[in-house]
Amino acid sequence: MAVMPDTDPDNVKLNDYKMMPGSLTARVAVLLLIIFFIPIVLTGVAIEAGMLLPGRNVYLAIPIFLLPLLVPFSRLIAHYIINKDLILIQKFCEQVRLGNYQHSFDLPNQKEDEDDFIHLLRNLTWMARSIEAQNNMQKARYFGLQSNLAYMQYQAFSDGLTGLYNRRYLENYIKSCRGNIPHRLISMIYIDCDKFKRVNDTLGHEAGDKVLLWLANCIREASRSEKDIPLRLGGDEFAMLVMDADNDEAGKVAERINKIYHQGETHGTTLSIGIANIDCNNGTNWDDINQLSREADEQAYKSKRAGGNRITMKGEIVRGNHKKKRARNSLDYSDADRLTSIPNRYAAREKFNQSIEKIANNSNRLCLLFVDLDGFAAVNQSYGSHVGDQYLQHLVKSVGSTLRTEDSIYRIGGDKFVIIIEAIKERKDAPPLAVKISEALHQPASIEGSRIVTASSMSILVVPDDGDDFDELSGYAADLIAKAKEGGINNFCFFDPDMTRMANEMITMITRYRPAILPEQMEVNLQPKMDARAEKIVGAEVVLRWNHMIKKKA
Image (cartoon, rainbow, N blue to C red):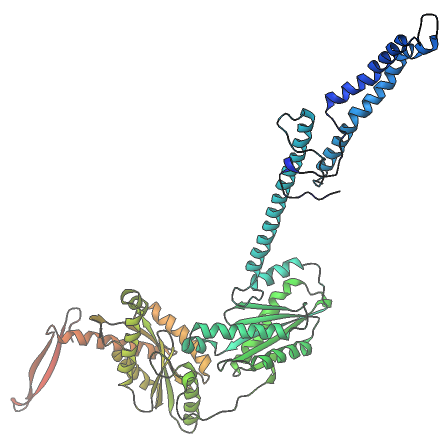
């Protein structure tokens, strides 16, 4: 059968069904001519020629008498002539009903006075073409919907940046496999990128995204087969489900990830990797995957606590790459904050480790002041980020002018800073230092004609009393600052509640003293000293009195 071309059927000739020539009227006329007129004409010719005379040559009249017998035979001939095309039409309609539209009739070019029967056949052909076009359109829409559905599923179950599966995919995969565990052993490799925030803070988010993309490619390359499922769980945390693998096999995969990762541009970042596994032959169900994820996460956290760049399983560090210490005479680009030109978090950690070694040989302590500016976001929103940047530069200079040579300030991200103060004798020495720095932070700045001042919340930790791990202390500091903010702005928070109260009382007193000078709330009184025995004045003292609106006299 011929394939239908994409043209107008009115002017097309195809060879599927060949119709009998002539219109239906012409065919009936020819049939009547054959059945009735030809015998009569032959009889008349025979009589005229003398071949058929009454009483003679009677056998020649036999056809005339047999004419009624020709009617049934003529009917069969008529049925064949007329119904042959009807049978073809029936077959054509049947093929269209079955969805096969590649059939047509062999029709002449259309004329103005076209026979009705031919016109009917032409309309049937056009109908088939229209149905085929609509069917093709519906198929195109169906495949388009399927494609859109597949793309939506891909977006829902994959990470937009790296293309790896996301946490939602993991949850869906767990649900789909409930009651049908296709693997004997399942291990999870949990990967946390160390020092990743430093990359974002110093080099920008574009460099951070490149690090994440590189790590995702390393995980893909290290996977053994399509059975392994690489995942990005969020931020700088990744994972991989390794099927039919014990700890040793999963450890080899983790080592391969770590090795490939360090062959690229990592900007000084490392990987903390944790491994855990479950045995599905011991009655484990897929609900335990959540516990598996938590266990692997815990192992990765232990790697990070141990200094990072390690692989741990079952609570023990089994593989590690210990970085050699290297001396630094000056800050390179990766250790300096681009905006303020002061050291960043990475340099703060190194300074902390060096200071720890110093105080280990004496009884001195180390003080860490973590500063979080209150209301700095409002400065950016009201005056623009360029003004906010200038204000941060002003604060750094203001605080730096109050520090000793051995003390230093570091920007650890956004509006957050840490100040390392060396060689304090006792814990009680920390609050006065914090108050001094707080005063420097609250100095107003005039930038582009605007007077800008912000408050700050501070957490104060003393080393080694409160700990000796920089990352751990940073976590404590974040909790303490959150607690300080609960009490309002310009608050301090220590591990020790008494120290917290002392520092807050000092800063409150200073805050009240400063405005007392301007409205002349302070007055000087000369108070005599009397000798009670001699009953005479032997001297005098000057007393400064504060006429406080609330406390009256102080």
